[in-house]
Length: 211
Image 1 (cartoon, rainbow, N blue to C red):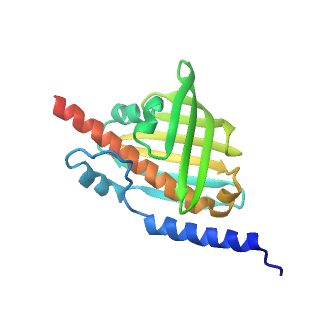
Image 2 (cartoon, rainbow, N blue to C red):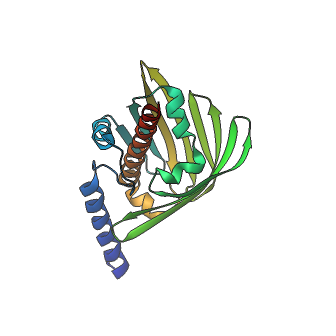
Image 3 (cartoon, helix red, strand yellow):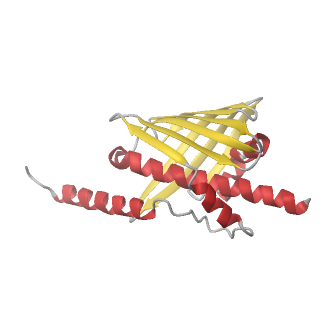
């Protein structure tokens, strides 16, 4: 077997990426914003509740996740559907804006960037989003960096909390994601869910303090 320089570089990149991903697995995310009082403590407590399962059949990657937030569905919904302000609380999203809206159907354009070691992965998408208020958000990528990306987020009340159930079917369109797809996607999903939890808690505390 002939080993080329590009093969060696690819192997080194993969090793570096895996070390970086696993070294950071489970650490609370930091989007550069100062946390409100006690928000970090509560966010860390909720971090252990994020359950993620990633499966890869060789082409399509399936992601299933569930976690709870300490608010009722309308308050969680307000954060999950705040598409224009997503860059303010999800660190890997650089831009997000609604480009079309018709009733409970919207189109959202997003761009983001994620770094692992010295490798940067840029992602862009235009998504069609179908909203069933306070119950379900269905998203389908109509153009972008992935060959396929379909997501469903369901909200289920549990007393004074809300359980969020997430499912995604993804076919990566970037060669690097085909190699490290499950690890990359699980790490990024966990970080984004934690940042969403942090924002939900932050807004809840603002409401309480202003009352």
